[in-house]
Length: 499
Image (cartoon, rainbow, N blue to C red; front, side):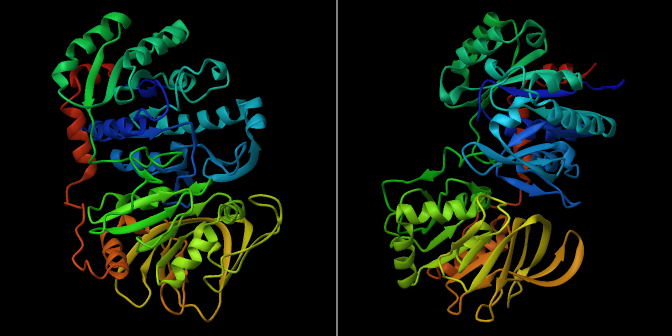
């Protein structure tokens, strides 16, 4: 598939899930871009409810959008041709090359992955024709032997691209010697030969103390250690399929009274929880994800996030007893916000006549906004811009939803929309209750912008009018690239990609 090129593609594969492959790939994308190389990211298949919209209105995983930004290239659905969006424990919506393709059970999907692999490699071929170098991210562990013959995301993609492989291990979780040596010992010899280097990620403490450890790994495996990367908190690539481990989930304590406490209900099918990354990094905010009902009296805001199974998560919410706590919070004047699926739940009803997300039917909503939602077969995919209704605070975000919401005259819009997918529009989004304390929107990414965050935090907690923010004007991709560059053997790294 690969033609005569100056550079050999590089595959970033992992010893396990959540070892930091996405961040490593993003760092490499920026480093290679800084070196003047036309680089682009690629991941054959993502399993994630964290997706975004490309400039041409197609859907792809958020991690590859971040990597494309790091590489300074326009995000393309070819960079993530197969996206699985779980909506139950055993099923998922399949987005193929940016468009909804089918609904599959795990058993049906993995019975024969040839069709999905063919589509992925078709996209891979197009990207290889357009760019000098690809940084390919693998999925999970590259050594899941029971799935090896059906896995087209790791070594099969590397071989299709003619790529060298860098293996990423996470020392923070422990057992790094077994991670590396074990992975290399059980994969087939022909795949082991592709592994040209190891990156030890997330090291804490005095890095000099691990120099002998790196030498031991090289001696045990015969594979060079390209670098030991200290734990880095100043950059985050949107997680794929779970709230990041460092987030606070069902904490025992209450939020710090000196900060703005925000509670986000952690639905079983939560989607795009990356909407809250900007708030989590803000030093004046304490954000908690809550599975289980608890008193919300110490929180300023309750957020209902996106969901890949709105009616199912609404039913879960009621069975656990959340509805009582939500009503109490509302009666005491708390601010309640819904985003996408959470916005739909705040209304009177959510109808799914065609069984788009689950069994056909209609569910009663929480009745906090006078709106009605019907799920439709066609998905709305838009990059959108506008302003908070009645203000000059600019906002931008992306819309990914199957539902169409009808808003009654008793509600004001939340946003004025001026642009969708580059086209000028005069429209509105969302709804606000008559007293202004409950509102919802379809805009994912609302909190990614400092102006929107400042407006929101000043509105919900006027006692802190001068909001601190983590934004310091420095390009986070440059910060990330500098961190990796100072801890990697760049000569070895560049020798791997040079043919």
